[in-house]
Structures are given as C-alpha cells and as structure tokens.
View 1 (cartoon, each protein chain N blue to C red):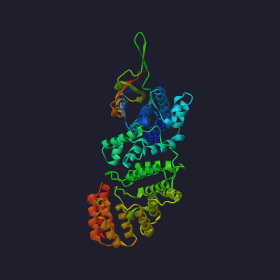
View 2: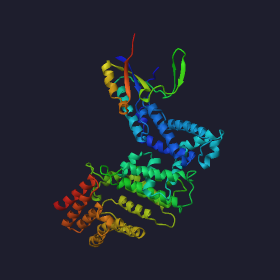
View 3: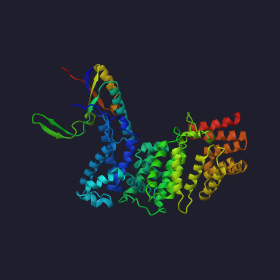
View 4: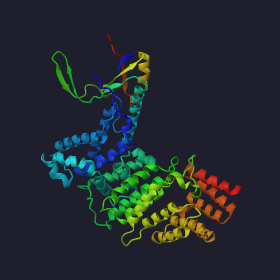
Amino acid sequence: MAKFVYVFRGGAVLQKGLSATGLQDHLKLWGAWMGELAKQGHQPAGQRVQLSGRTIRGKNKVVTDGPYAELKDLITGHLAIEAASLDVATELARQCPIFLFDGSVEVRPVLEN
Amino acid sequence: MAEPVASGGPELLVESLFRHESGRLVAALTRLFGPHNLQLAEDVVQEALECALEAWKFQMPDNPTAWLTKVARNRALDVVRRGAIERRFADDYRSQLASEWTLAATVEESLAEASTAENQLRMMLTLCQPQLSEETQVTLILKWLCGFASSEIAAAFLCSEETIDKRLQRGRTALRQLGSLAPATTGGPEDPRLGAVLRALYLLFNEGYHGSHPSMPTRVVLCEEAMRLCALMTEKSDSATPQAHALMAMMCFHFARVAGRIDAHGVYLPLAQQDRAVWDRALIERGLSHMGRSARGPELSALHLEAAIACQHCLAPSLSATDWDAILVLYDLLYERNASPVIALNRALVRAFAGDPVRALDEAVELEQEAVLARYPFYWAACGEIHALADHRDEARRCYQKAATLARSPAEEAAFRRRAAAQQIN
C-alpha cells in the first residue's frame, strides 16, 4: 500500500445560504464517503482546518491575515490515505462529495524513503 | 501530524439535527437581539451551521449540540460587543447585554438547552401575530422554529417559493415593530394568543395528515413538528390550557393510525381494511392522558370534540364494533359549534354507519349545492360509501369514479378506483 495526501479546495464553503437540511444532507455524504474509505482499509486520517488564519510570505516574512486565496482555491482540509496506486487513489477521490459544490481534490503521492 | 479518524462517525448525526438546532438557536438569539433583529440572529445561526459542516466533515464532535452552542455563543458575543453603540437589542435584555459583567452569562443562559422550551414557546407566541393570516403564521413557524428553507416550505404547501417569501416578508415587517419576544406568561386560558398558536398548529398538522401533496400522501415530518411544538405548550403550566391538551390528544389519536392508512403500494386504505394491529398503542395511551387533562374548565371546544371522535376510532376493535351512535352525538355537537359543510358531510357518513343510510343520503345530496364540496374528492367518496351502505352499487361506483377524477394525488386516485371496482365484483 502506498500513501497519498488529498488536498481539498473550495466546496460547500462556496455555496452561501444552504438550508439547514441541505447542509446536513451534504455532511451525511461526507460521512458516508469517509466511512467507505475506512471500511475498505484506506486508513483515512484527516485534519480539519479553520478557514481563517495567516500567511507568511517573502524574504521579509510579511504576515498577512485572513483568506489568502479566492474561495474556490481556499484549502478546506487535507486527508492522508493508503491505496494500491495513484489510479486507485484518484478513483476514490472522484467519489468525494466536494464536487457537488464545485470544489477540487488534489491527489499527491507521499514520498517515502 | 494527522490525527486518526476516531469513533465520531455519522451515527452521531441524528435526523433533523441541523434543522432543529437552527430553530433552537434562532429563538435563543432572537430573545436576546429582539425580534426586530431577527435577520441578525439568522445570520449568526447560518454561519454556525456552515462552520459545523466544514468542521464535522472528517469527524463528528462528541456533542454536536454543545459544539454549535459554543460557536453561536462566541459569534453572539462578537455581535453584541460590536453593535453595542448603534444597535438596539431586545428591550428586556438591553441592560444585561450592555455590561461586560453580565453579558457572557446572559448569552449563555439564553443559549442553554434548559432555556430551549421557553425560548421556542415565546417565539411561537410572537410569530402568531393577530394581523397575520394563519397561513402566514404557519409559514413563519416552519421557517423560524422548524428550520425549513423557503423552497422546502413551498414544496410542502405546493405553492411557489415567491408566495412563501412574501409571507416571510410580511412576518419580518410585523416583527420589526416589536422590541422583545412575547412573554411566556400568558393571560390565562382566555389569552387570544394561545388560540392563535393552537389554530396554526392544527393547520400544520392537518396539512401533514390530510395534505394535498401529489407524491406524499402523508408528510410525517409536518405532523411531527406540530406535535413537538404543541408539547411546548402542554408541558408548561401557563399555556397548558384544556384546548392545548385537546389538540395534543387529537394529534396523538390521528398520528397513532398513520402506519395503517397506506398499503405497500402507497394507496390509501379505507378504515374497514386498515390493520388495527399496526396502530401505535403507546401514542394512543399518550392521547388518552392528554384527553384526561383536557377535561377541565367550562368549555367543550371543537378541539375537544375532534379529539373525542378520533379517540372513538382508536379504541374501537373493528369497524363494525365502532360506537357509531356515540360518534354521531359528537358530530352533532361539533356541527353546533362549527356549521361547516365538511363537518356536515362527515356527520352524514357517520349516520350511514350508525344504521341510517337513507337519511344520510338525503343530507349528502343536499350538500352537493355547497361550492366547497362540489370539487372535493372526499365528498364523492363519502357519497359512494353511503350508497354502498344503502346497497346502491351502481350509484356507489359512479360516485367513486367521480372522486377518482377529482383526486389530488395518485394515492388518492388509486384508492378511489379500487373502491369503484370493488362495487362491481361483489
């Protein structure tokens, strides 16, 4: 099994004013997707991140507050998983509910020594 | 380091959690901010729910309600501190919110789960403003106490989203005049606000139970919401009037029978064919307890009578063993209080079951003149039933066929066609 990292950008954060039921239905889809990854032995391990924070940039290490990207590029989480190949990891990511709200998933193999 | 995904799975996500939390938090915050700042309360709640989606997608917290409460508390404190000068908050909380000594404790108390029932009761009394129509009141309740979106309410009532938005706008305009939520202490059982709330809940329940939705004959969720909100009244001594208990009893007796009303094909079953074994006995017991508590005071209201009629059906072991004479007496009393054609029609049907289909038929034929009944499918279905009891098979079949052409949903239509066909076979 190889290790991969999914980087999530955008998603439901783009969609303002979803109804309470709409939000809950979407959360249920995430729960189902994560549950399936775990059940199939892909060992998902994620970290939630707040949508605000800081960026430090340049030689002068300038610190800026708040979102640093357009919402569609805003990182909304990352998840480590195990899969047999990049193709398998890609196919698993394609099932993620983030695409319902126009988000993206970047799939990156983890370098191992 | 990434944390392993722990046990906090989606099973913690109870049905309707977001919707109910939305209703709970909107009431708690409107109590503090004042009804004129309803939009502000809604914004804080929306933000908290959106935050929850992002935070919970990898892992549910152990206590979702506590999590949401904390986020809403922090946002509310921000809002109050930032708006301290230019905003006017609820009249009855202005001084507590103005001082840092009392601010946090006041916000926390209002958001505490222990305050939910009182907050929602006050919100409900506030939304049932006398100048608003009953449809508008129900719309506001569904929006701000039950957490439904305009599109969801429009789908439930089979009307356009625009109509719902107009009603919400009327509600917002009315609320803007108010400085604080209505007090939970009422002016006794005669308080007209209690009657307004009961009428709105009655309408909500009926829309769920007898509603006209084409694909969902019973919208269980509307019935459940009406019962949940009515319980807020019956559990608080001040608003637990005999009528509130009577309404609760009526809803329990009807809802107890919901499982038997529709067969595996989604077709309505006539009472005669319903499997009484699937009726919810615990709910019938609960209804009886409310009916007991409704028997106080001088007034035998229409709600009391409707509860008593539904109770008779629940307690009867079979259709033939039903005490139709007792039900007929109740219908006579109900008609005295509310001489509506629909009640007259039901009474005629009961009279036929009680053994006098000839007189029942006279009454039913006379009712054909009523404009509200002529295109009402149940008018023709009731005529069919009465004809069948009088052994007029051809007329019965024709009436059922007419009912089928007027049916509002496939479930209704299939039920009437099936009954029309049954007249031929036998």
